[in-house]
Amino acid sequence: MATTFEAAKPVQQMEIVGAPTAADPAPLGLAAFALTTFLLSAHNAGWTKGTGLDWLGYAVAYGGACQLLAGMWEFKNRNVFGCTAFSTYGGFWIGLGLWVLLAAPHATGHMATNDLGWILLAFFIFNTYMLLWSMFVNKAVLAVFFTLEITELLLFIGNFAHTTNLVKAGGIVGVITAACAWYTSAAGVVNGMAGRHILFVGKPMSFPQARASLS
Image (cartoon, rainbow, N blue to C red; front, side):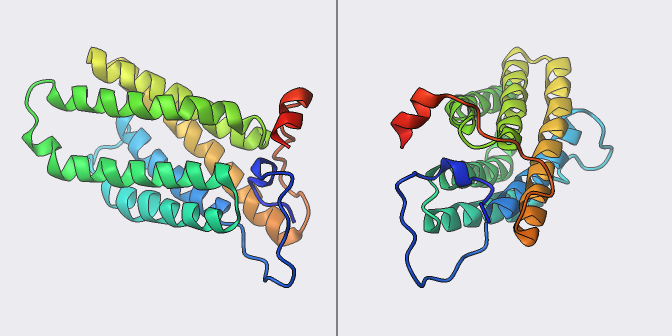
């Protein structure tokens, strides 16, 4: 059964004869990303009424650690797209959690929003080229990176400009991003269990010359 990020693997890859087949780590990485993104985005949208830090523990333990593990397992699968995406966003959540614990308490004035603006801008740059390469994976993965691109754009502009409405808009789009990631995770689980496509993920975008050069 093809893995969630199968199309991102090099075409010339050869399977090791006799090696046991490993489970696809992508559904775990996507689920971890989805849940933590949902919690933080609901906070950014102004929907939560609790401490405002309900997402923090899960950012480190689930969105961070589990995604980082999924990224390492994608290295084992020789999947450069999957290992780069999951490891980077696992590091993002761990780093964000450490920033909240270590740096944010010492921020005054607009220091915190300025920090967040630069952090989100940096990951927006990373996400931009991963969005382009996700077109060679499948449409479900493309939807995750596309909605995430809009989320990060709204959030870094909103933080730099100190505009609450833009941050709230970024939170709403972030919830949509989480939904796309959860759907893609669910598709990876059930399609892998069934050995066939139960939930639609779509084919890669058709760029014959570009795809030929990758092979």
